[in-house]
Length: 359
Image 1 (cartoon, one colour):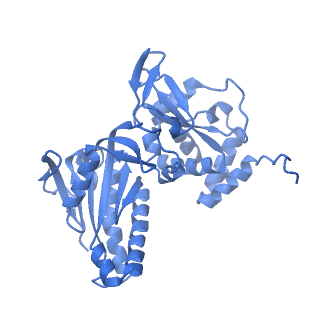
Image 2: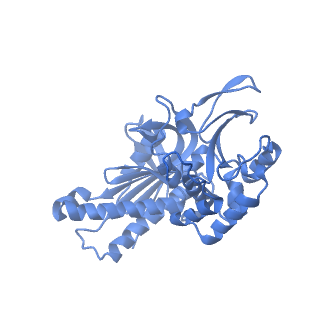
Image 3: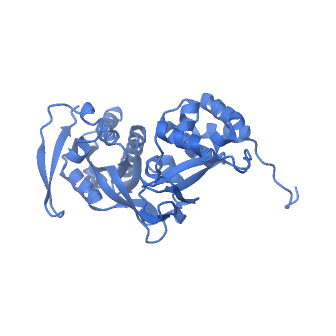
């Protein structure tokens, strides 16, 4: 083939078939293929991903995981939309996080506003031009607004708590010096007990193997609960959630999963892994640190200190998380509140509860 010969454009069916490599079920692939080929064009332009999830029979989060794979294979393009927090008018749109700025101007209100990742920066998707060409003027704004009212908008922060999307944007940090406020996020920190001694007793290869397996367990637990791992810190992880109940469930499941790992591997007493977990919530800042999207602020520092206060095989949850919808329903009713003083944070008192995991 000559170097300048045009490459064939893959069909939508070819691209949909590639989704099998991402673990997308055949039934979902078939529903998606039908939608891409036959849906009215306006329904494939700047659509809310919650709408697509509904159409192909998936939960909201599973729909976002599907969209991560679909963007990867080239079926859809991702749109970041800055919408005025006062009137809802689209003030600006950008293709990449590297183009994002928190200070926006609304031409309708004729005023500046501060866009937050969970209020003001929404995400939508459009079918890729090479898959299906949509004519100019296809936008049905009334339909999109009605869909948002019915299903709720998809915020950029919700998107970034899906691990597949965080991994997709690994080389796409915020612009230098830029930060975005987040009104509320639940943060989970974990720490592995006795890992230093484990390295000393068992040697680096054996200890590293166990620590690596522990990371795999926690990544899976966080993803299954509805969050994303932001980073690992030594033998610890930091994870983020938009839902407090999901964060608590992840903490509970992490303790259960590590104990199950100990039993299944029949680890001796000097190899058994123990975990301490803390969950806290509040406002934070999304920033770029070490070329990765990260979180910064008092809520982050407090969450790390809350985890440090936990005993091993214990989950500590703050009042800020307990007040979130759905949390009370998944916790025992007889938990005793305790006042915790977090040193270094103006000695602030925090009300917490402790959940000890028992075999």
